[in-house]
Length: 85
Image 1 (cartoon, helix red, strand yellow):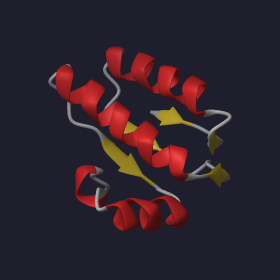
Image 2: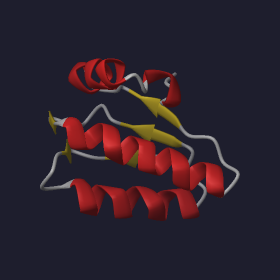
Image 3: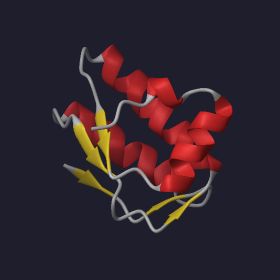
Image 4: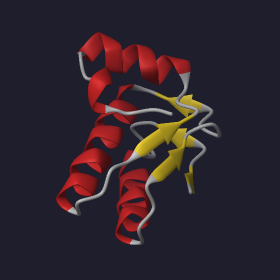
């Protein structure tokens, strides 16, 4: 299970790469409960992971999504593209 501590502009590229590696290894559940810092980059990274997973015929589920990331996804109208459990 993927676990991160930040999803911000500064950490976005590293998080994207870590998530893509996890998807390639067959991970399908990403735990965002440890994310203490997140900005709008988080939504972009989550969507990029979803695209990568779909290309690999996988389905991602996000758990413990920070409230501010949920609110941003809703604001941007993409909350339905980010399945949570």
